[in-house]
Amino acid sequence: MSRFALLALSLALLPAAAHADGDAALGRTLFSRCAACHAVTAQNKVGPGLAGVFGRKAASVDGFRYSKALSATDIVWDDATLERFLAGPAKMVPGTSMAVSVPKPDDRTNLIAYLKTLGAPATP
Ligand code: HEC
Image (cartoon, rainbow, N blue to C red; front, side, top):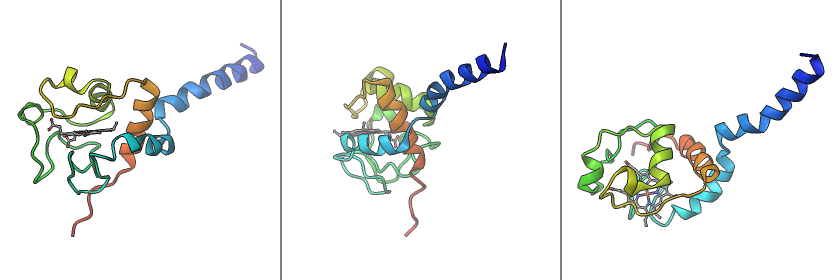
């Protein structure tokens, strides 16, 4: 392959690579759909606080009354599990009390990128 063809190819692949990583800034904007129920701190509202959610076990925030359905799973929140959950919470976890889904794949990717930026809850 010529050098030019290689360059053209890598340029063509760039947007795809950027997509796989997600855009946390866009995700932050999309989080307005979640903020009614979720704080990005340790504070529990209608939903559990989402600080540090990436990498933690599902239904593990102290003091939040999770559904029996979610508590009974052994899900750990990572790219793949968040992707499935946000696409259809009740499809992945029948009986969950989280009723909101995110139908667009791009929106899910960007939201997950944003969730990754939420650090562990500050210890008081
Ligand atoms: C109408 C309220 C509501 C909205 C809006 C909402 N959620 Fe939830 N969410 C919940 C509830 C309630 C739970 C707990 C589910 C359970 O116990 O089964 C939950 C659970 C979760 C969990 C699992 C947390 C854990 O500690 O295991 C994640 C991740 C999550 N929501 C992400 C989101 C995202 C991202 C959005 C925005 C697209 C969103 N939620 C919008 C109510 C909501």
